[in-house]
Length: 250
Image (cartoon, rainbow, N blue to C red):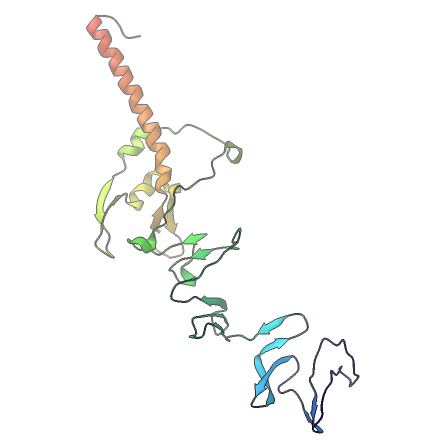
């Protein structure tokens, strides 16, 4: 019994260095040709060639068709799929123990949402509006760009005491989980410091509803307020000292 294996170029010419294999196998005088259409990968289909319809190779790229899962693990533990069926995004589904991404750096081109749907991602990193750990971030420190190289029109904050007096520090309970907390009311802060409050301008409500606020931007107001109060205290102390000594304050 004689088996011969040949590589065939398109057009029927035989060549040893061809990149494309159209796999004509001659066995006992009978030829078995590849299944499916051009560029489709082949598999052993009960002793015959069968086409892997979702997988094609064009000499450069291995392509996987839309809505086809590339599955990992003997128990279908994880998968990668381009979901084109109305969504048009890549789905990477990890195992029950999660996904590990390693490297010297991981680049995210635009935005990242954790625990929120695609349509709910609004910032570089968006977490859900949850009052538990799923809505919190944890780190040793958070650094903010603050060099004078990035700023212009720098002025000391005026009327800091008046601004502070118009704000309320409150206790409250989150509606979602009845957890007690401390903070501000964003709408109230927005009346005094509108640029540190984020407003929902997408809805037609008038006035727009406050969504969130940057608590750290309160710090310079408090700082200048403390300094202003300290100046008042120092002046009062000087006046009291003069009164005790029977002299006029300078």
